[in-house]
Image (tube, rainbow, N blue to C red; front, side, top):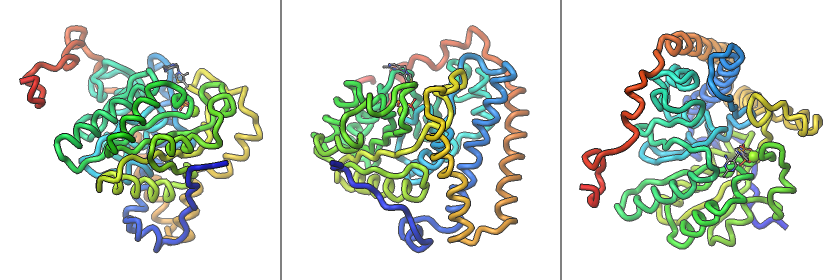
Length: 348
Ligand SMILES: Cc1ncc(C[n+]2csc(CCOP(=O)(O)OP(=O)(O)O)c2C)c(N)n1
Ligand SMILES: [Mg+2]
């Protein structure tokens, strides 16, 4: 039996206004979702053209979840987004041309050519770059939340992890400490129902991943990750609760990974019917329909967003391709911090 609360879908425009989004905000959220998908689609083309070293990961199906969470974060909050969360980078304001530069290992990517793919973040925008080892970023986010507590800053950390990664010890360690110290952290589980080729019934034995929150002493919520407004509303509540001293929340966002684990994987092991079922709740299409029915989005507004995104992507690709590859002697720059770079007293 489920222990976590199962969140209701969002209904009216009024409810959305109460949650803090006006009409302009809604159109911006939609634009960020369209841009997120566009970046990953163009990235896939770059990969096929042989311009991207290594592999290529996308978060198709996760656009509502990633944009919805990021839209609920405050400007001084921090986050540790993962490989399905391009919408977080887009919403926090990473310019698309820098994302393409990152994909291609160029100096203008957020890691300045030191890493590829989505192993990136712009710390000036409150994001901490992921490492491959999952869910190693959870203790990092919990550490950030502990720092906020010690420094008496009203900031919140948002920590992403996949349902597969939830089986590992660092997840348990991070949540235990966060629960015991009532830290200002929101855990977001991107449950896309597959960990590479492993299905959920081989990943966890509870009904929901969020059911575990109760055992750590905080609230667990399951939300439909294709419903951007429901994601926004639930995360906004959890962030404000954390900011007010109410401790952590675990939000499980349920989606389906709509492509292979990465582009080298054709996901032959996912039942075709499952894809067909989930394609019916495509996050972009769902929100587009909602906006037309509830916020009177016009054909002109929709076309304007589509063409602005297209222009942005074309310009971004052109600019990224002009960015050079890094020079070998620069590779160690910015890798190690010196005591002067750090503002922590014991490093002075
Ligand atoms: C500690 C660790 N073990 C194995 C891997 C290899 N690996 C990369 S992604 C992945 C699947 C992760 O599944 P999930 O957490 O559900 O995230 P998803 O990729 O589905 O978003 C695995 C096993 C890893 N990155 N880190
Ligand atoms: Mg998964």
